[in-house]
Length: 352
Figure 1: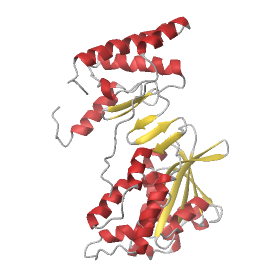
Figure 2: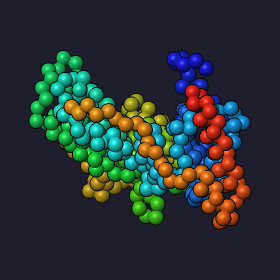
Figure 3: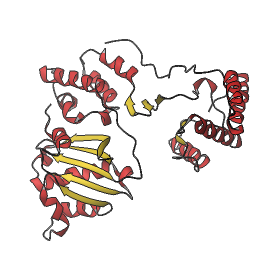
Figure 4: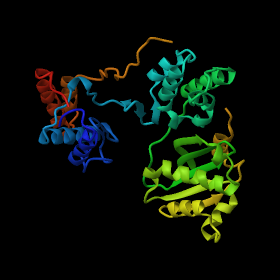
């Protein structure tokens, strides 16, 4: 498949999913030419790695040895730090951002917002924090980087440094969405309640345009619900969802008879999901309520590579496992890695 074709990424992703279809969400996650093999223990991870490498051999997939990392407890995957704690921002990228000077041109503002926006799922109310900066990107707007813009610039950088750890979804549990809307923005939080504790998966927010800001209260509260289910659609399909809002009228929205066309359209969209709307006071719905109401030149390159993990040599690992009676499948995996590394080193120009 040649490079540069508009459909090449989609075709390649379909190919990878087809190859690892029976492994996905069980022992491997695949995105384009990056995939991560995982296990609940050392031995299970080795066993899963052996299966994945065998599948690569069967499918004639060639991997780049220099870009591979084996048996690590945490690592950078698709620009995020993945560990048993959850999903975090890449601190190396945040460190570079903290050294940035305030933007001086529209291009600088756009670059900063694009850089910070990559991690917006970790930042509460990102759209409100960045509101003074996004105004500078409007057409026919004079570039005046005032005190509000400078404050927003520093608040975003501080939010990245203190960004919380979010969790990957557990498909065995129902989802919860906290929603709230103000006169100028909407905010929502996706999470799951496990052992009576809320685990945050995703933060999302957006500002309202002039017309949306004039919506009636019920219409505005419906808008944030629609925004949430569209934003989190990939999580919510075929799952039980509880939506918390501080507007009691939404609980009876399906029974409303004189529904306006726009509300009717939104109601039809909501009926695609298994939703339960729960009335919750704004003071109890603190996270989403805060999201909707909160107003708001270093040359060092970004290092995209993950540091080398020198945990053990393959030879010493094999000897240790033999002495302690590990399973033959684990030893087979180590042997396979050794053989594969020798083949790859002999052909350094070949890669996925």
